Image (cartoon, rainbow, N blue to C red):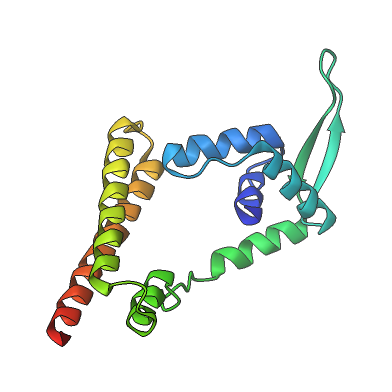
Length: 171
């Protein structure tokens, strides 16, 4: 949550609730909605780290609000984030660990594990399809997020099929 908030503040000053709304509008309902409390806790941490500065703004009919802006250090942290690549090969996959250890424990059948996981992926794909149909078609970012998740799920389903084929050959 830290770096996405910095990225939103790169556009200009904002308060916590604005940032929450901006994230929701940008990412749509497919992305887990951040809790406003989580936003403010993260903003406090960013401020203590010197990546943002907050300024109290008086409001006549409401309590004061704190508006945050990016510092030079925050801008540098954001630049560094954009330079990094996302390196997430899935070699530390919990499901695969269950699959590999099942024969040694005798507590789970590998094919049953695969079938259960396949059902989960298919249910998630159905939910994402419904979400995509309900999502605003003009929100391309949200549509791309949903499409990416579905493509990952399809790859996971293909991999489950491959695992099942290999395990059945071994039996």
